[in-house]
Length: 489
Image (tube, rainbow, N blue to C red; front, side, top):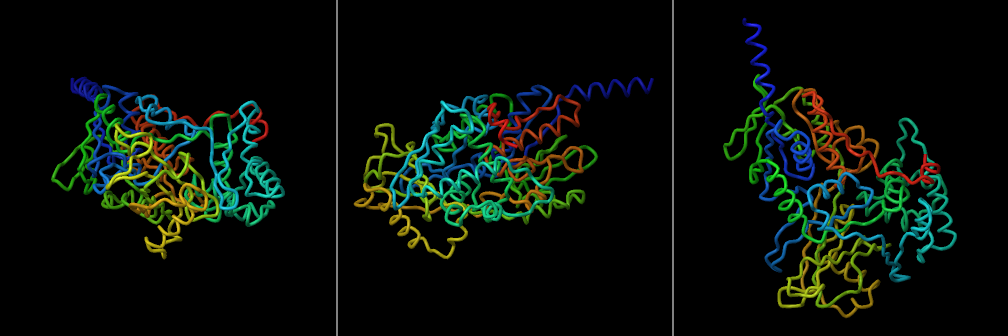
């Protein structure tokens, strides 16, 4: 009789929704929430806790009252190879907030602006030949050098415990310092946030093979047409709430504790949340603070020391347009990208912002790895950027800078090298019901928006395995074309 009673209670318990709390409302936490409610529906009761007033984490925005507009901390773009991120956009109806371009515009003081576009009539990876041959700031000999280096990179096979930088590998394979600086570093800074001196060969190969050579669409540039706080903090959150996720913003988690009944989550405002599973989706430098009292997770203390790279976004307002471009990759300058976001215009304005006492034509300069410019004060930095912009854009020579704002994220991205890869933890932990998400975890990707989305899915997969549910599987990468599969190792 008692045995039958025990079985019946267990059966009832299994029918109860599993309470899951996601700590952190960045893109990894939002990805985990979307995956949970989409795949498991009534089996789960999902609550998201975010310390800020808006979700999105580092992929977010701020309001600048001086110009009465919402601005992204830093301009973020994604690429066609980021298939899990793009799938998330499609499932949540967010693709309409992105514009897609296959063209890349480069600028150099000696040659001006050059636009490259893939030849889609050629099979991948040869469709990217314009990227190698239509760069006038490289000599003919340097273009051949890049072509040889690209082929050898595609054929490179990882050696166990290989621990050399991408720059060292490039030099061994015949790339000059000037070519490394004017070609390889340009892409490394733009996509991975650091120079080839700091990243691994694997990271460089991932960038060029997955990002450019894999198929015809992998190198497409996706640029948001709305602030990220609107896309992630409003539209994505609204989608999740309609699906049943409870989102609590302005709720800073103080600590996570484990007891015989599950987990207790204490917040600064005095709230106490109990749950069966916790997905921790906080940044790597905060993880130890909220779980410091759990001895089994002491190994995560090493994660706090993961070296990261700064990214600075310089927001500029001029009294006139600087040229007919939406984004520009600059070579041989402090600036690396120049963007012209259009959402800052009021509905009554044209595509460019109308000049007024408070607003002008808005541009954003992105500087990755900006820690090396720390000794440069803001006035010196702005003067340097104005000089560089006027060198590459004739329309900028008579332009007046009306206003500027410098925003630096000191921990923008994890540096992609072998030492860091060894420190990045898996989604699973020694505790059966505590899971990790974040672009800093072991996803196989750099710490990008794609890495963040994959991390949320991997955390859910770990949770599902413990509940004996069907596990979700992230898409490993964008599919390679038939010729690319034969050439790329």
